[in-house]
Length: 435
Image (cartoon, rainbow, N blue to C red; front, side, top):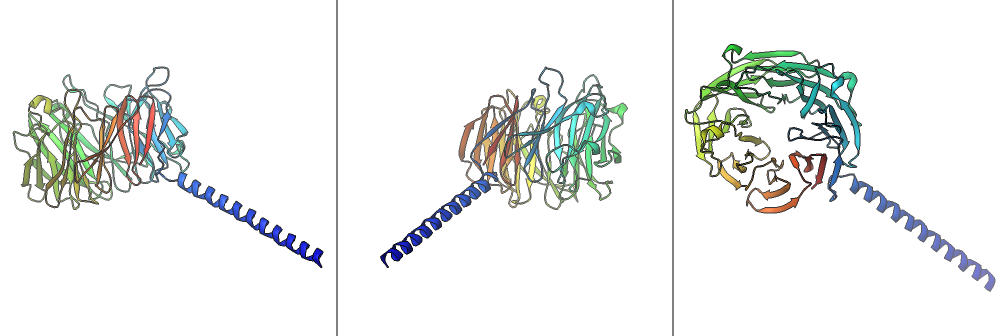
């Protein structure tokens, strides 16, 4: 009987120990799964530097795919010092390179990639400098789900850009319609709308005859608002500035809305950006020489509001002509983000305005020029890159809440707004910062 009791106790003890082992393994598996999930988010505290063969310039920006899982950047110089010809894709979670596109295999005149822009369907448009002095090239290529380039569906197009002895700028900026079907480009005399599928010109408007084009008669910038289809051109003519407003139709057609002459004493810096309100019934702009924030009603063409923003003005009119001030409207919060990058001898400046009551919420001067600045999607924080220092400010209080030293030769700043993933272009690669 005692022997049977001992055997029974041994069986019970064995079952208890076996259950303990099973439970321990289950906990370990659960913990491992939790760690995997945590590492699959953008909330990692570990920053990454992705090495790129060759060299980047301030013209080489970073863009992210729709889900934020892939990033893309071009090189300005190859590793051997020759002109850049490579566009790279990389995984934003692991920091590993995925694919490389050779722009010299694009049936163009030989191109050096600069700016990138990507639409909501992950179709990438690459702006590039041509070997021809008066031409700008574009390469349109879809990005596959794995981050590789769908080269079989690649499309090329080129635009001739008029040049004179006193006007040698080659604009490389493109905007995209909300659905990504159309791209918009200006060569300083005309505005073009092209299909991002075929590369064909869908519509165009000539603003300036090429025979009349010069440094004192040119389109100096354009702004397109995807949400309401409004397109604004800044036309400078003999020192006077005009804003021409169009609406982009569903089939890519351009409908003229209004031409507004700005006050004679105002200078709009070359490359400046305007902004529209939600409905596209008003537009906002800031003059470079006065630092004056203005609100115009599109229907009447009337100036509805103006205010001098302290710290934005550049009193030297000739310098002001070359200092862009860029506006961006945040439809989620109704806040207007204003940044003046400045240059080597001119410090940068950022401001935020609440468009509901036109109150100035944020106004910050910097000691040196800005390489980039972005407002978060919720309108609560501003990231500003100056030199190799990244600073973070609270919008409502202007309080600096973070300052960190980045890799040397930090060039520009990009933000994936859905997760506050920051991409910093550096001379030899990309630095990713996970907030």
